[in-house]
Image 1 (cartoon, rainbow, N blue to C red):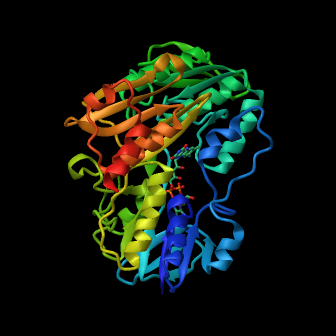
Image 2 (cartoon, rainbow, N blue to C red; image 1 turned 90 degrees about the vertical axis):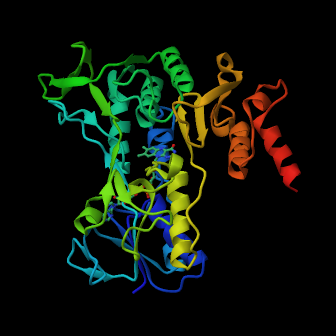
Length: 412
Ligand SMILES: Cc1cc2nc3c(=O)[nH]c(=O)nc-3n(C[C@H](O)[C@H](O)[C@H](O)COP(=O)(O)OP(=O)(O)OC[C@H]3O[C@@H](n4cnc5c(N)ncnc54)[C@H](O)[C@@H]3O)c2cc1C
C-alpha cells in the first residue's frame, strides 16, 4: 500500500525523497497535478522575468533519474477524493490508489480578485510555469504595467517590469508594502527603494474595476480613489488560498489551511498535511500559522517522512524566507510581530542593513537587506536560542555573524 503524496511541489517531492533516504521500503507514489517534471517556483518571478535573462528553463526539484533510481512513482493525474474508511485516493482518470499513509502537499493558488473586469485578457496572475511564460511574453511588449498588491510576488514582478523599461504602478490597499510579513521599518524602507527604482507605489489604494480598450483587452485599472491608471498589462498578486478542498470534503478540519497538530498530522492519524496548504501550531503561543515558503515546505516534507518512519518528535523549525526585488535581496529569519522592539544594524541609506526584532528582551526575528552572511548568522543565533539583547545589538562592534560564532564557541 505504502505512502501516497498528493502534490508534486516542493513539500511533496521532499517528503518522497526523505522517505527513501530515511530507509522507507514501501511504495511511494506522488500524484502530480501539473504536467512535466516537478519544478522550483521562486525563479518564475525573478530570473525568468528579467529582460537580459536567456530563454528560461524550468529548474527541476529533482532530476528525472531521481524518480527511477529511488523507485518513486510520479503519477500525472488530479486527486479528486479521499475515502478515509477505505484508505484510498480517487484520481480524475478513474484510478484508485490505496494508502497506508497519505500526505496532503497540495500547495496554494492565487487568490482571485473580485473586481469587475478582473477576467479581461491582459490581466495575469503568477503561480505556475505556464503563468510565468505568459507574463514573460507580456513584459516583452508591455509599456504600462499595473501590479495589484505590494506583496513579495507583486514587488518582484514590479521590479522586473521596471527592468523592461515599463511604466509601473503598484496599487496596495495597506499603508505599507509587504505589511503582513515585514516590520513597519523595513516595509517603509522598501516603499522608498521601489520609488527610487522609478515604481509608482500607491499605498492605501485598492481596485474598483478594470476597463477594456476597443480590442477587448485591459486598458486601465480604476482604483478605490477613483483614479484611472492606464495599463496594457496587469498583474494581480493579492495573496494565495490554500488548496484544502480535498481535505475538507474528506471531513478533515480546515480553516486558513488544513489543520494539523504539532507533528503535522491531521485528526486522522494516517493523514498529514505539509507546505503552503498546512495550518500548523507554529505561531506565537502555539497559534495556527500557514507559511508560504520553500524552507517551510522542505522542512515539513522532511518532518512527515520522519514521522511516517516512526519518529514521534514535534515539528520544530525556524521560519526563514527570501525575496529578490531589483537589486535588493531581502531575507528574513524568524517571524516578526507588530509589537516587537526593533534595533537597526548598519545604515539603510547604504542599501545593506538589518532590522533586529526583540520580544521579551531577546532576539526573536531578523530582516536583512543585501547582508547574506548576517542573515546566516541570525539563523544560527535563533536556531540555537541564543539570548541576544537590544543592549548587545547596540554595541558598536556587534555583528550577527560574530555573535553566532561567539555563541558556538560558548557551547563547545
Ligand atoms: C512565483 C513564485 C515565487 C516564489 N518565490 C519564493 C521565494 O523567493 N522564496 C520562498 O521561500 N518561496 C517562494 N515562493 C513560495 C514557494 O514556492 C512555495 O511556498 C512552495 O512552492 C510551496 O510548496 P508546496 O509543495 O507546499 O506547494 P506547491 O509548490 O504549490 O505544490 C503543490 C502542488 O500540488 C498540486 N496539486 C494541488 N492539488 C492537487 C490535486 N488534487 N491532485 C494533484 N496535484 C495537486 C499543485 O498543482 C502543485 O503542483 C514563490 C512562489 C511563487 C509562485
